[in-house]
Length: 525
Image (cartoon, rainbow, N blue to C red; front, side, top):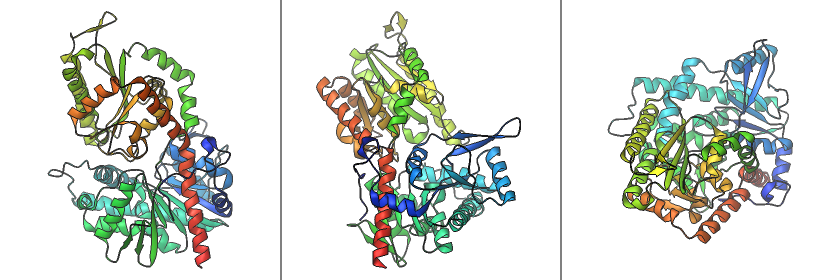
């Protein structure tokens, strides 16, 4: 049976989350193939024509590295840079099946998509169409419009690139002397498992979805051809994983709504379709605690921490987010404004520090939202311009820090009394977990119940509805006036939870379930 929670085992990994013996045995006998749109490293061409590599810092890269010692794994990804494309062409000309970068424990295969095909696949279908749909962000009276260009992007872009991914994965699998084990990542590759299953019927497939999965009614914004193709392909997987149980349940209902012949087993979280059984599992993703703490203790972060002394106050509210609509940043500022109106005794005593990373500025909705953020911050700061002084200087209620500076963001997370995470919908929200790990003030997290992190962190956080400005204002007051012993207890509980259910536990749970699945299949046969 596939489990809802992380597996906690004795072992040699931090937090006691060791790789179970059955999972280790599986990895030693298989070739693990990871596939995602963006890979674990990029090639860059230097002036002398040589290649340098830049390793990604994402959680999936860290998690996969934790199992690489047990498996000669391969990562299939889109060629993102000129160096990626040049290196991939060299490999093709030399007849290399796999690219093995120096000083790397991960071998690569690149998908070389045509520029127009990739644009349709990524910039028209994956982002924004699927991303906006899966975060319930469409202004449905006005958008999306599924026009001829959208259909062209679907058929000549999304379908085409997903087929290229499948072909590269199958080529890597066939070149291996071991049985392949394929782990697909996220919404870019919804059609890939179905194509792989046609080409290699006996392959073991697992697919993890990092973002929310909306209810069946909302999927009707997509034409039936698109949503049915997605569901049909996803049920070619042996296991489909989600961040939360509600996302898993919505996926099961969506498949039932859009496909004929689906039989749902809610008790065991299984979907029976066309003679196959797909298990639906919950694996809440987490962070690499060691890596996060190392960056937070770096000289760069410590310099930022010293600089931030000029911005903190008696009470400090922090948020760290990508500047995009699903994060609900504007409503967070409106709630802060309402808090100051309702509790004027805090005027001049509390500062709001917002660290925002511009995101997907090729998408008009993201540009407009960043403009909305700047407008509301300017309005609130003007409103209170002469309300109080801080160290002899006019008090500024909101300080906005725009830019991608990870050490600075981690430095700020050490200092909050309140961390505001009021996302409209979020697959997980790792900022909440980073804050819980790093904070040194016994700070309180205000957490949207629609954020995936709520499933784990909710019992020791203040819960808000993402649209409820009034209650969010009340939550800020509650957090700032909470009993210190309760704050300390909550902070300790959250820190221990994040340390125990870390990124290694996330990947190990998936490998363990795949090991149980293959054992059950072998016994059945």
